[in-house]
Amino acid sequence: MSKKSSSNTSRRRFLAASGAALGALATTGLSSRRAVAQQKPIKITLGYQTLWAAQGELFETLRRTNILELNGIQADFKTFTFGGPLAEAAVAGEIDNIVAADVPVLRGAARLSGTRILARTHDARWALVSQPDFKGGLAELRGKKLSGAFATTTFPRSVEAIVAAGIKDPFRELTIINQDVADQVSALQSKQVDIVSTWDPTLEKLVRSGYRLVHESARGDSPAWLALTGKWLAANGDDAAVRFLKAWVTAVWWTSNNIETAHAWFSQTSRIDRDLLVAAAQQDRYLRAPVADIKTLDFQIDNSQVESSQRVIEFLVERKLLQTPIKVAGFIDNSLVRRAQTEIAAAKPALNDVKVLVN
Image (cartoon, rainbow, N blue to C red; front, side, top):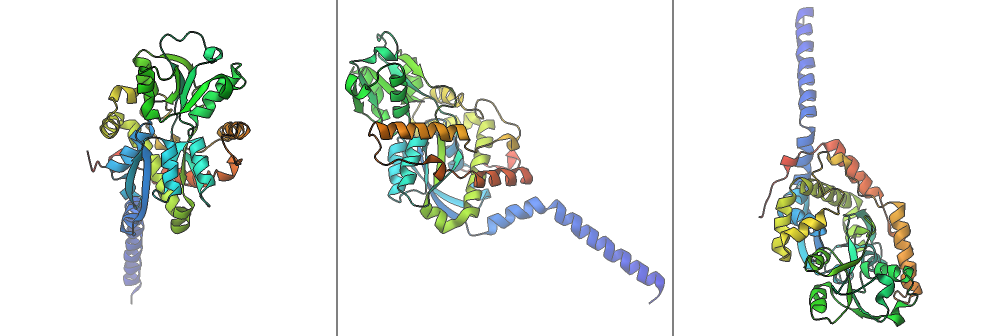
C-alpha cells in the first residue's frame, strides 16, 4: 500500500471515529431517557391527601403528566382525607409511601421495618381558629372545647402552643375532642366546639367565612415529609427510590411553572375552591412563584426540622399521647434526594419534556 493510500485511510478512520464520538455526545441525554423508557417499569402505589394543599397539586402533576414515565415508574394512586388514615394504609400494605406532616410519617415509619423518610415535600401552614365572638388569645381558652385530629402534627403543635401561653394542663383545663379535619367546619358552624386545630385549605376556608384566627404557625414550622416503605425499598432498591425522587423534584418544578393547571386538577379531585388552594400554595417557597432553574430546588430535611420534630415527639410521649419514643434522626436519609438532585442537574431537563396525559 502506498504512503498516500495509507494516509487517506487513516484520515477516514479519524473522521469516522470523531463523528461517532460527537454523535454520541449529542445524543447522551436522549439515549439516557430511552434507556430508562426501555427498562421494565418500577411499580408503586402512591397515597396522597385530598384535604391538604399544596401536596395535592404535586401529586396531581405526577398523576396527570408523563413525569413518572420519564423516570421509568408506573404508579397507581389512592386518596385519603389526611395523614393519619394514609399512614395506616401504608402500615396495612395498601400503599408504598407515606406523605404527611412529620408526626404521622414518623408514627407510620416506626411500625414499618426498613421505612425511610427521604425528602421534604412542601411548606404547610396550621392554625387555631375559633368562633367569631371568642375574645382574647390562647391563654383565654380555659374551659373551652377544642377539636383536633390527634394523629396529625397540627394537634400536638397546637397543644404545645397552648401550654406555652400559660395553660399548663390543657387536657384538664379544656375539653378536647378527636375529630377528622373534614368535620371541623360543621363543628364550628353548629357551635359543637369553640376552636379547632386545623390546616390549609380548611384553615383558609374558615377564616374567609368569618371565623377568628387565634394562632398561626410560623413559616416553615410544619414539616411535611415523604417516606417510602421498607417493603417497597427492599423489593426495588435505592436506585428505584432515586428515580422516584427525581420524578418528585421534576413535578415540583413543573407545577411551579404551571400552577394554575395544577390548581384546577386538585380542585377537581378535592372539590375545594381554587382560591383556597391558591392561598395554600403561597405558603410554599417554590410554588408561590415560578422557579426557572430546577437546580435551585432542594428537598433535604435539615437539622432544625429534625430537632423540631424530636421536640414534638417528646411532648407527645410526656403527655402519654404516644406510648413508644421515636428517635427522629434514625429515620431520616437525605442521601437519595441529594443524589436525585445531582442527577437532575447533570441531565438538564426541559419543561417541554413534560407532557400532560390526563386533564
